[in-house]
Image 1 (cartoon, helix red, strand yellow):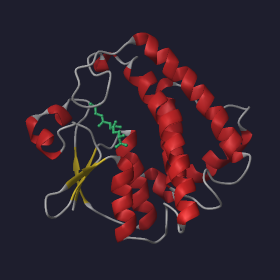
Image 2 (cartoon, rainbow, N blue to C red; image 1 turned 180 degrees about the vertical axis):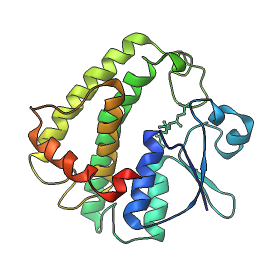
Image 3 (cartoon, protein in one colour; image 1 turned 90 degrees about the horizontal axis):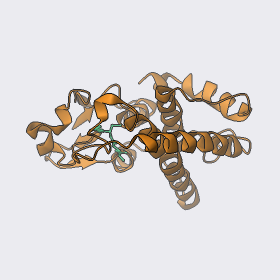
Image 4 (tube, rainbow, N blue to C red; image 1 turned 30 degrees about the horizontal axis):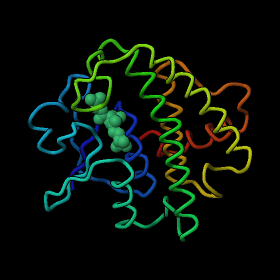
Length: 209
Ligand SMILES: N[C@@H](CCC(=O)N[C@@H](CS)C(=O)NCC(=O)O)C(=O)O
């Protein structure tokens, strides 16, 4: 297998943390997103959408999108389970992971891409040519602030995002909080439970992945 990664980017980081939690090591190729290597013909043969992460299997099949990649790895390497251990926990973790993506990650991407000069003609990840719209950066920032409040609410009910154990939902939320730092937003004094959770998950060895 080969993992197409970009060290600085938050989506492949989710997979790297997932692999680190499971102790998996996979041959990795770096794709230089800042210089548009993801938009060059060579990478577009791997993923015509022009985004990372991608996991290329030994038979050449390329799987993109973080969650399906993690699902595949979860099935190959079930321990420790990071996507649930029974029907209910799998559904709860999938649901919360989707919340972290839709309510957090997308807002971070909107805030960052629409306010960063190098992305002026890359308003949406990958092959689009869709221009950035500066006003959308404000909407993304407002969404991130709402997301922090959402995290606080969830984490005032339990130690992790989805149930009693660390899961892919925590990995996703951790990557969103760190991504929000790119646009200089973060958890505040009004998020004590989320801050405590952040201190705990970001001190796991996998967070350095
Ligand atoms: N929903 C996708 C998002 C993938 C994505 O947006 N990847 C970004 C890096 S975080 C990317 O490849 N961007 C390419 C670009 O900016 O052109 C996933 O979870 O894999």
